[in-house]
Image (cartoon, rainbow, N blue to C red; front, side, top):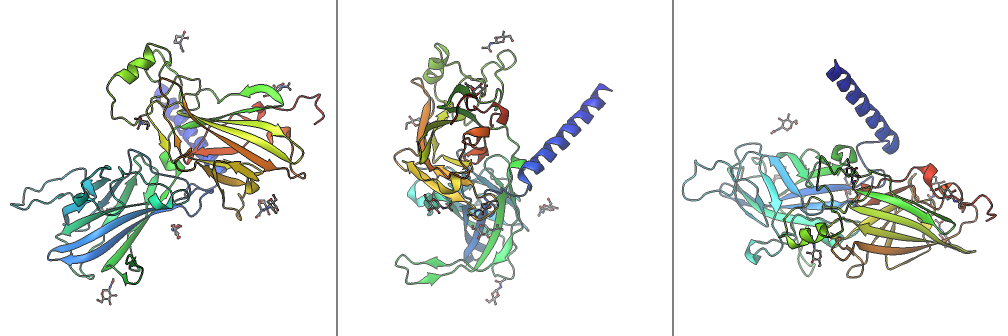
Length: 428
Ligand SMILES: *[C@@H]1O[C@H](CO)[C@@H](O)[C@H](O)[C@H]1NC(C)=O
Ligand SMILES: *[C@@H]1O[C@H](CO)[C@@H](O)[C@H](O)[C@H]1NC(C)=O
Ligand SMILES: *[C@@H]1O[C@H](CO)[C@@H](O)[C@H](O)[C@H]1NC(C)=O
Ligand SMILES: *[C@@H]1O[C@H](CO)[C@@H](O)[C@H](O)[C@H]1NC(C)=O
Ligand SMILES: *[C@@H]1O[C@H](CO)[C@@H](O)[C@H](O)[C@H]1NC(C)=O
Ligand SMILES: *[C@@H]1O[C@H](CO)[C@@H](O)[C@H](O)[C@H]1NC(C)=O
Ligand SMILES: *[C@@H]1O[C@H](CO)[C@@H](O)[C@H](O)[C@H]1NC(C)=O
Ligand SMILES: *[C@@H]1O[C@H](CO)[C@@H](O)[C@H](O)[C@H]1NC(C)=O
């Protein structure tokens, strides 16, 4: 009885969450702020071999702002027949599988459904190909096109040796490293073009296959990883991040789910040998988020108004390199001035045209440092907007953002009725 009503309740909650989700994002299949964003996998067959072929596989992250961060991507597929991998350069399969039928020359992998991961930086040169060996990190095309591709080479055996007899690998899966990406069917496409260094000769592979993978926040289903707090010069109230945005402090059932910054707790973490773990280790706060974005309305003059944005890292285990913010705000189609920051409007001609992406400048503020014994890592940005007299107002929370993403994750916002407002007596 109790179990039954619990199931009912859960089903109801799931339906409700789903409806809310559809309402907010209209579609579950894609991100409205990056409607064409995808990761394209190209499988170029470079040469035929006596029993198969050598291919170069390249992943292009054609997304505006969503990176794949450490610990990086893993790519899987299912062979159509009895194919196997003789060897790989620039990556490796996580398992070799059962190669017991071989004598002498042992393949790299005999599994029907191999899973491939990138090699780490510092791999010997003779095991590298171009764009490999970045520990699976893949930056977005919108922010860092020079690092938006990842490649590896593999030699496939027991495969066809002509373009009529080879079979496409199927059911690609891309983990980043969690769920979130869905890959479409493998398609035969126009051969890639490779340009020689001096650009005077173009070569092409024997065959090219394409797979397109898209991201869905709905599939990812992870708890928020960031939250937003607000303040302004015209009201002393600081509106904090909502309590338990990213989790709750639970000191009895889950001791150690966060770190008390006071001695002796914190120093003990840094003195014990570093564990190679990517699970966030956050400072104890009421919101429990690794990242907080504070939006402060700082200045109001006749022509301009100014905002100071502070990104704070509460995570003791992660440096966020190549961080980015996506901000939706009525004035964001036309930011007037910005200091020490890259700015790019997103989908400027679509229905959501008040959104922009902000990110740091290389070697200046593109790294959001981990929290440490001496304090939290942070980055501060100054944004200056020209006042559009027809829309500008300090009322109804207008100078505050509607939505903020940090590295592609939607951040928890305070409820609109909590936003700081103008004192009633003010005539401004
Ligand atoms: C994938 O991204 C590329 C580059 O932006 C774009 O040309 C292509 O149309 C996209 N494909 C899909 C199916 O969205
Ligand atoms: C295979 O190669 C032949 C010529 O060598 C070409 O005409 C044909 O279009 C190719 N087929 C595919 C699927 O690439
Ligand atoms: C690929 O996935 C589909 C559906 O998930 C399944 O029906 C099919 O058998 C799979 N193909 C292979 C070769 O595993
Ligand atoms: C820990 O839990 C106890 C009882 O559950 C509570 O009284 C105490 O305030 C909690 N401490 C913190 C730091 O949350
Ligand atoms: C973050 O960067 C600092 C300084 O470069 C380095 O000492 C630290 O080990 C890095 N942390 C991680 C988790 O990589
Ligand atoms: C952006 O602002 C400039 C002046 O700062 C103005 O000339 C321009 O028309 C504005 N563009 C849009 C799309 O509003
Ligand atoms: C931005 O969107 C609004 C409403 O969705 C529209 O009225 C306006 O013309 C758009 N601006 C541009 C530059 O497309
Ligand atoms: C500031 O805003 C808060 C709402 O966040 C409100 O409760 C408070 O009264 C405001 N302060 C003044 C002086 O109006």
